[in-house]
Length: 287
View (cartoon, rainbow, N blue to C red):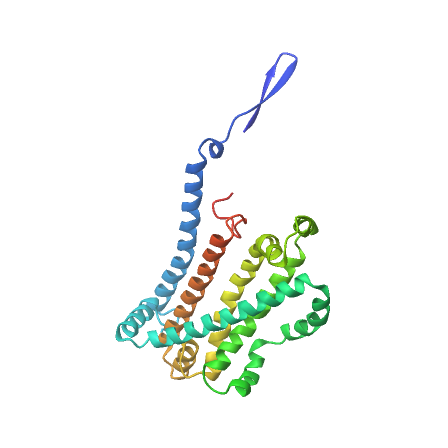
């Protein structure tokens, strides 16, 4: 806060510290509490409005069951053990495909970001494949791997690969040349150059791409399970809709939402643990 103190023939600017500067911890806690309250209040308000609309008959509860009905049905299915096999099937496919796609995307992105000739040879082909809708590749994977888990895992891996590849290649290319020159001056070996220059400089951007890929992986596997699977949350949603079991359908949708949020937040947490020097990708705790 800045005030002007006027004296005869002169003016003096006096700056007084703001409450945020005087009490930074208290201000941070209040801001954090406000952010958490807003994050909880918005979805809670929507759920309460939905519950009221179903109770008053503003919407057809046969098509849009009340949240209380969805919660009760989900609890019953979980208690009976009918829900967990589908959750586990989807989770296994996501984890397997995500691991394969991340490893392949990071390795190739690192190679193409470091070697211009490799980038010139492969980038046009990968750019063309990137714009192909990944669900369009499902028949190809079915022909390659047959029925079973192979096509589902391959589809997730292909989707994740492109996100990680692009973020890794861009991050490596964006490393200032002075970083590489410093490593060469000190006689760093290829492994030391990777360990002490390329990895720490590129990892924050790579992990942002990996977090985006985590959410997209869940979207893709659910769509794939609706087409070519006999279990999983995608199959549960599609099958229950065909049988007009809309409460079960919404149970599956809620499970997908929770799975996607938890998976994405786990990737974010791993990223923060691996890159404590990097700025956070959200403005939490900041004003």
